[in-house]
Amino acid sequence: MNPASFVRALAALRQHNVFNPYADVCPVHDLSDAAAFRRRNLRSYLAAAKSIGVDTIWMGRDLGYRGGRRTGLALTDELHLTEMSKLYPGCESRQATKGPAVAERTAAEIWTILRSLDLPPLLWNVFPLHPHEPGNPFTNRRFSNAELREVEELNAALISWLGIKRIVAIGQDAARYASRFDAKVTTVRHPSYGGVMDFRDGMRHAYSLPAPRVAKPRQALLAY
Image (cartoon, rainbow, N blue to C red; front, top):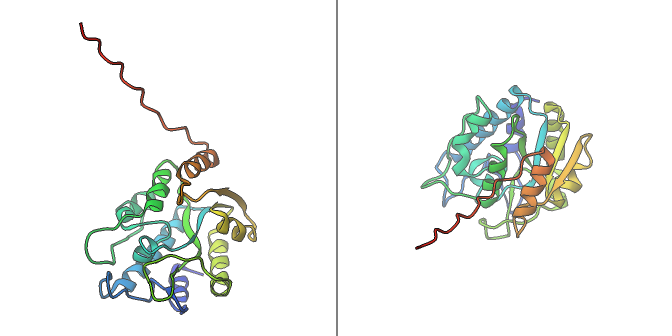
């Protein structure tokens, strides 16, 4: 595979109650050519990841409506698009939506850890599109088994093309899926639903990162 053929195949997928950011345009938030911007974002990102020798994937569950649905990049919100080229030299990313950049809590946690690494991973999802509740595109839901079957060959091709040796599974859905590949799997808790501290601890353990410094309280001055 190559980034162009991979993105074309991903853009060709059509499923009910699934937003494909590489083909679909949101009538509420997107620019008219948003899908083309997101295809370029992903092509550029994959090419940059290959060129720097990425051998690890951080794998989430699926694209969220505040993050990947808008950017076309897994675990990445619009606030972090400007950092892509710093961690992945050669990556060119731009916002595909109207108005100010939108933040996502999970992306903020992901990118805080990314800045501590010498070699970043590829950020990806088990299901690389945005599944939503029927009639409500601005919701998140878990993908179905039938939906997953349609992307399994693409996921396998991506992992093979990059020569992935390690998968850091973010959450149990990702952990169950990642176990099918010939790669070392490390599981950390997803930062949502009260899992922030466990996520941070899991990532620090996975990468032997130092614990954050805790500021000591200033000693009160005595009045005489």
